Image (cartoon, rainbow, N blue to C red; front, side, top):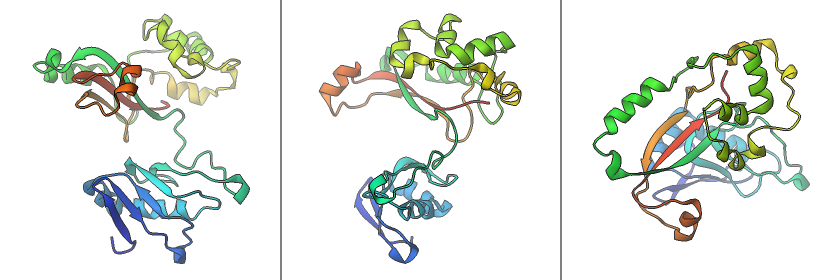
Amino acid sequence: MDKYMITKLSDYKWKVGKDTSIGMNVPGIIYSDQKILEHAVKEGTIDQIANVAALPGIVKASFAMPDIHFGYGFPIGGVAAFDPEADGIISPGGVGFDISCGVRAMRSSLEINDIKNRIEDMMSFISFSIPRGLGGKGKIDLSKKDMDQLLSRGAGWAADRGYGYKEEMEYLEEGGYMEGADPACVSETARKRGTRQLGTLGSGNHFLEIQVVDKIYDRAASDIFGIYEDQIIVMIHSGSRG
């Protein structure tokens, strides 16, 4: 860590000092434990945090979340805000180019006592049922007509086919599809790449985890979301496929 002045603010928060000699306009703030921080230093991710901190118009700090790892420009897990009144940049692909990449938590009606003796069986079933890895192919083979419907109707098409629930549509951005989406704008190459990708998890830092709610820190918020202690939550990190 000699290259940068990294200060421990807490067990899970670190500060990368503002080094004006390399053009940093603000410090870096990393939310991680010691192990994640050491890995970030080893793979050169701190350099990317510093690079973001040197961009024009950056506000307050170059932030890094706990999923921090080496990226294409920004570090993956990097967060930054830029002030347009201070010549701040606009970077549509700073972190990467994976459309709709993100993490979603899904509630279940199960509790830890319901599954604690069947965890191994559950994970074996999930591993068998959900293709993953680079170029993983799913079990859903889309025809041209299906692809057109999927591209125009989005999650609504999937719900009609039994791959989801219609009542979930109201919780999705734009109701699960974008008005005016035109399948004709999608190239043949992109279509071929995506034909067998529906229902796959992907590679890189994508994951599917079965989690248990260990402790509630904000009772009012958890009540709104319907989350309670010992509840089983499914967390999925994925993004555009194909």
